Image 1 (cartoon, helix red, strand yellow):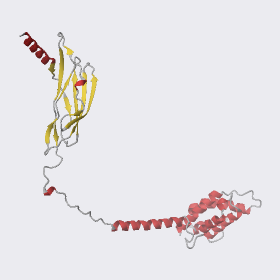
Image 2 (tube, rainbow, N blue to C red; image 1 turned 30 degrees about the vertical axis):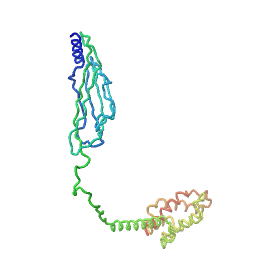
Image 3 (cartoon, rainbow, N blue to C red; image 1 turned 90 degrees about the horizontal axis):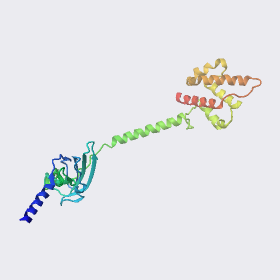
Image 4 (cartoon, rainbow, N blue to C red; image 1 turned 180 degrees about the horizontal axis):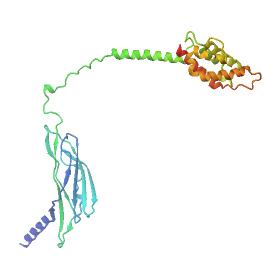
Length: 304
């Protein structure tokens, strides 16, 4: 009798050691859109009073759970709160290895978490708190329909539609012609085509003559070069030019109006240089002179 009483008391005390908790366990996961091979991410969160200490050994280990479900990853986070309580966060990642014929709800397994044994105030008995994480239902969709009917059979390959190839070809041909014309026009403006224009103007002939003579490589313009430029200006005006008749040049060749200041300054400086008995030196800028001559030749070709 004493032995039976002793065994019964131990059984009662053993049952009292584990206390079902009324802790609010928050579980977050997506409930639908799963099929064979998908991952189920579940987040569990709850708080423990400062009188309890969570047992990390109660967290399930990674590995196969059932024939159709594996626990791929478990992550535990513990945070101390201001009131000395502890916030427990656990992330579970399950992987599905089963399928169904029709979409239906399946349950993840129930998880029982525990705290470490602590002494109850005024008593020497050790108690363990059990935290219940209930199984969660998720919708599992089928991979294939139950039966393949003739309506679901693969359809014959539809030939691609015939696109309009003539219009893009015509547009491409027009763009090619336009690009060629613009290229020829650019070469004509830059005087890169020797036979165009057929009857070149005086300024264009001047540029070609100075290029053949290699004036650009000289240190400065010689008196012969200056007289050559004067002759080209007189040819543009259609008569000999003097300081008092220089305006006739711009009347007969209006395309030189943009270079009027440069031409007038050049004409005055060279006129004085030609008629000085003892010229002190050539102060005509070769770079500036060749620059306005090239611009004037280009304006002449555009004008023609």
